[in-house]
Length: 131
Image 1 (spheres, one colour):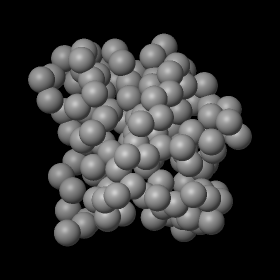
Image 2 (image 1 turned 90 degrees about the vertical axis):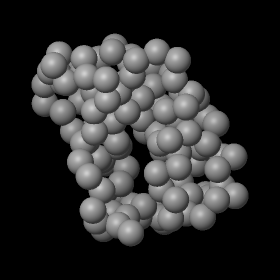
Image 3 (image 1 turned 45 degrees about the vertical axis):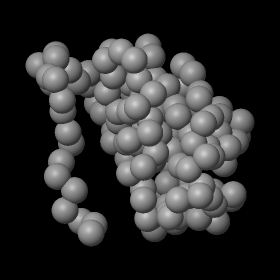
Image 4 (image 1 turned 180 degrees about the vertical axis):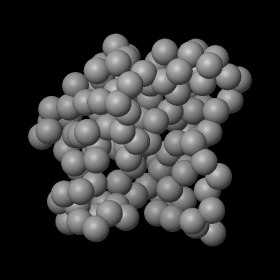
C-alpha cells in the first residue's frame, strides 16, 4: 500500500517559529518525525507531498526517510492559511493508484488491518473541531 503524507506551511517560511497549531514548533516537528519513522517500519513506500519550507525542514535538516518527496504545494500559498485541508485534497488528486493519506500527527504501532486497507474509502474521523 502506498502511504502519502502532505505538509503545507501555509506560506510560513520558518517552521522553527511557526507552531502549526501545536503548543510549540518543536512539537510539530517531533510529530512529523515520529509519524514518518513509524510508518516506515511497516510500509516500504511512504511519500511526502510538501512545499519548500517542509522539504527543507523534514528532508534537508531532519533527513526523514521518505521514499519520495514531491515538492509541489508552494502553488497553494495564494490561498488562505485556514484552508488547511486544501493540500490534502490536492495530494489526493495526484494519486493514480490506491493509497492511504496519513496525517503527520498519526502514529502507528502496527500495520493497518487488511480490512481497513481494502475499503473503497476510509476516514479517520468526522472533523468537528473547526468551522
